[in-house]
Image 1 (cartoon, rainbow, N blue to C red):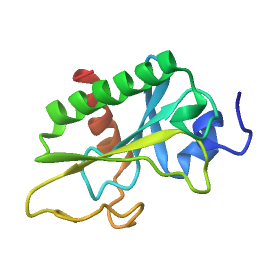
Image 2: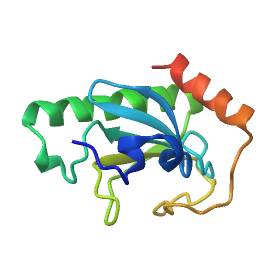
Image 3: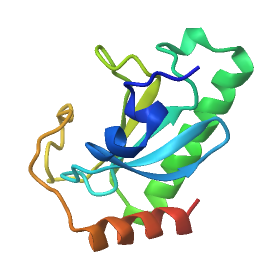
Length: 139
């Protein structure tokens, strides 16, 4: 099931507003979040347009969390955060996804909840590609 108004479902221009597709995982897509105040921040988005983890089968839920763990390991290896924060929101988007937000001691928002989109750090296309290459090399 796909939603024509959802960037996770349709990719293209809708996704380009906030993220860059990296690759498909077992049951999810890995997306680089364009706002990079937290270097290495990504999103793991489930393949279908469902709202909650309870909306998918036990097996699909297991595979989704395997995708989250796989992406987390790659982010840790590529960017060496002190802690990775996980956020599952979607009050308005309603597509099952999880933000993987690297945090660094004494860095931006250390010790607090990460802001959804602080709008402080956008990169060049070459810098985004370099980040994507680092993540892919560790998947």
